[in-house]
Length: 276
Image (tube, rainbow, N blue to C red):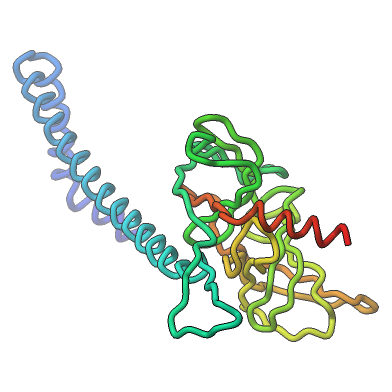
């Protein structure tokens, strides 16, 4: 403190000079229209230059992030090519080549609105019935599952987010192939739960949970999340498993709507099976 006081005393004349210069400049600008105009013009030029530089930097960083997203999406779509197709074989005669039958197709959509902090959350997408969108179609991002279409108009559709009290998605632990049901407990939009995993199964923190493929809505192996924590309470037959979702639902911009090209056929087969 004493050194600061000594410094101010030593250079007091310099500081007084600077203060007087600022006062003189202010009086000059405020009392003379020409100088005021010149000052405003110069000030605006400097401000515009700074803002333009900031904008360029922001655009560059945004472009870099967008390119990263596109790269993830392209990689994801390439990885899904085999999952999107079925291989059809003649069961009586074996041939060296096979006929590939497409099972799923994807429609890219942009998010118009997205809630993630309510107990029941929804998304609005810019695709509707004119784009072939129907209720109960699955919605995913490049990083994993997002939700299920619940309402459709001509140009838009509403999606029940996985962050919803009625959301229940079959999830499979990749390390042991056991399947349970994924729910959102409603507290943190980044944390989910996997239930109905038997007490005798073996898995570890960090194991991946993906869609099982048992439903007609989602293909198999779509990421849901990663095991963050688990507990087996005394006397219980099933684990309580906590998941870190693979998708950051606060940063979604683009998604994919899944068309199951054989959905009606699968539904009919299941109906026949249930009648027996």
